[in-house]
Length: 362
Image 1: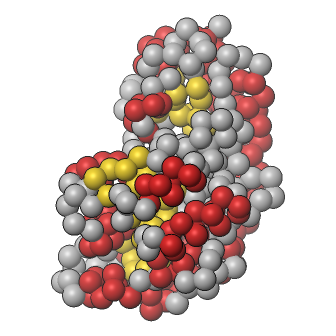
Image 2: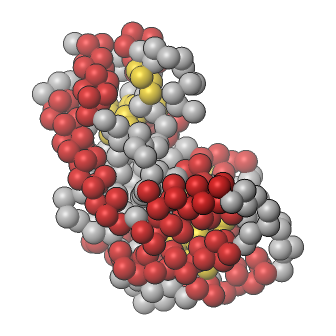
Image 3: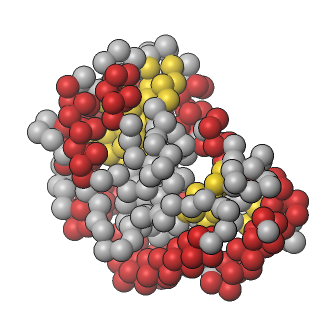
């Protein structure tokens, strides 16, 4: 999609997927199905999704989820929207931490819920815990959380997550925690699922997982979630079996193969994109472009406020440099001077993208 949206002369660095082949195991799983012309009903891979995911996150994050408390969805946003709708009524307050992945806001608004924005601190993208505490006491029922954070690449610290968890528990909030970037963390740091913080918190957290970002399988349309709250699971059980759909057998096969056999692939890719991150940060650090060093993801959140293109910078860069970045305004009204750059590509192409951006700014 990203290579055709703007035309052949435009270098795409906007949408969040990688320019790398997925794990060979995923390719082989799909190849086997195609060669067998096995396009009929086939549920075994779908049935394997939950055990494959729970084993993966137990190994990676050290948290053990009961398989009976997990559900399969077609995407992370699908899971987020379904849980939010089941747990709230129109007009209920749903919080997000802006700037944040724009479908969060769209889900809240299209569901006729009240969007409660809790802006992150711009200097380091940490949570404004005092503001969150104040709003949690009166306006919030559900929190949409993204850890690691898209678009900033920030990894919320154990300290701030612990305080966040205390507020959640005290005010009996439900948190839908999008953790699909949790395997893409740099500098030897590790991820701990939000559900692991605080006694009793697991029942107040819906943990959303997917192989889409980790293994470049967004097109597989496949996600798994742990729903610790029994009342929400009961609400799902009372709906028709196909009310929320399910992944295709092809997407499930690719996903299961990645979780079972993709770890060495991930280690190699993670080293490469960390090198790309360091390259981008160094290239922009001596310019007027603002950028915090991402601790996770393959996204650079660039601030052009001190440059000549502070208004709608992605549009100027597209027109003058033929590079497509994701517009910052999509992630929050306060982000007009920002743009998001995807650095999960070849170093050669990344160097060209960075050079073109710098040409516009200089």
